[in-house]
Length: 237
Image 1: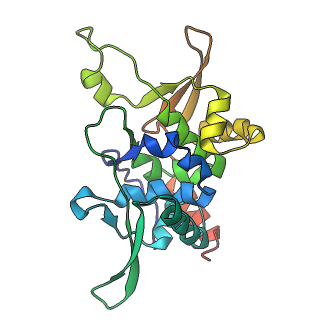
Image 2: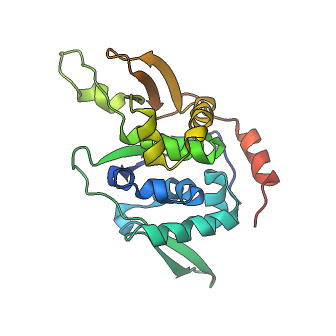
Image 3: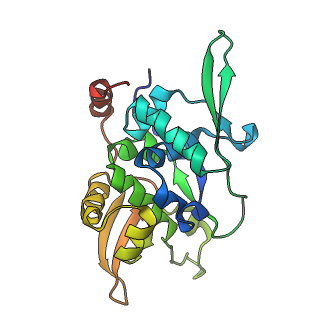
């Protein structure tokens, strides 16, 4: 059975296709589909043509939902995403298990994707976020930007690679429309992201628009003991 630990994998990430958000496919997905997609995608590897085989209990723990909703979410992804597949895999011990295939955007296409860091999952930040907060986080990352200069006065460089956050000034109506949440849910979703150390308010930008610091890597994680107790309390079916 999966258990959270102090070991946080902050090196691994997957390329989250912004077209999934911009096409409003993300907005139309069920909350369970939104919860499990980053979890499954974090296990997928280009070396295996995007295939992976995490157990339903592992997906459930990292997504913060029950195994029943893992199955429902995965089926919703099959229906919504042409490149998402589910197949049966025969293990070495003669048991059938599910394996998943996640389509990935082409590497190197500027502006096509953002990097979803595995530390968000390992630290419990994703599983502790509410369903609306999960939906909102992806949208804020999609419309986020990074502008700074390195020691030479040039944009990007090592400063860009080492950044732990980006900034988002997207309008509330845009956040609501592309996340698929209701107007009345926006504030609660923002507060959940604050609590899960995935978002900070930074006041306003130079043009008076409300600005948020959206974390790429959380600067705070949840205690493994707390997370594992929550797993034990959660129904398995």
